[in-house]
Image (cartoon, rainbow, N blue to C red; front, side, top):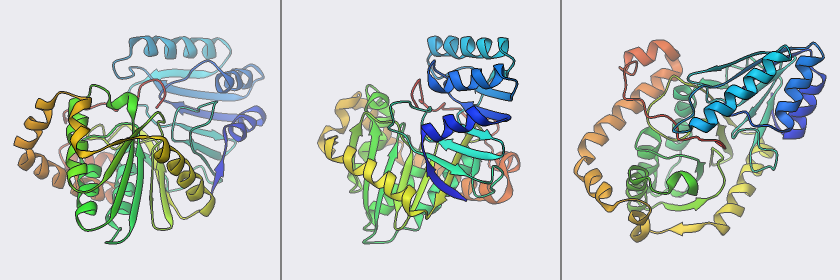
Length: 326
């Protein structure tokens, strides 16, 4: 059963658990690290996995390595591995999922699941985005979709949002200002979405959720193309408290954000990227359709098998630009 939780709830769970399993893209010094370290020192079983090679971030990779070394010295089974993007904690069979990197100052959404093996919760990026895709595709003319993502790229989610906007759905999106700056490819994809009729604004936050009707999708997966096999989580829920929490966060950020109107999209990156993107529209559309078919089957058939079926084992990997805060 899913319910809204908090960083304090997760810390309390670590503090009393006999068995802890923790994953995060980044592990910074602070309360979460201290709780994990204390649990290991008191003799609890503590397993920690973090990303070995954060995107374009040598200093962050070194930070993760230092955190792993410290935990190992205190008795934890800690490792840095590739393909770790999920933010998940299991403490004595109860799971906690965060859509950012366990932010101590807030600005994230944490959900609790009393069933750590809940099949409704996706555990790879491909399956997580497949559930988000179904939520978006279910919206009809007159409905609204509010979506927030740290990184945004040309792929299944961008295509679904464009189609939703064109069929009369009110689409509003918040995207991380830090990730957007200087990224011409991301700017070009956003320009397409704005031309389709969506509203897009930039925010300092790094959350990942989508709201449509009475349901919410929450997860750690960015709305980007590629890396579908990496560890991520995502779930669609009709829990009213979770949805309201996300809706309030979105409304507050939307009102503060600098709106990215159609004419300003090119200014966050080189304008030639927009031109190059427009020349490749047909090829991109074909790729989107292929990926969307693969994602839907991916969730139904299973992670590894469907990756092979849609030819993504040797895909051009576009890592999530989820750097130190994602």
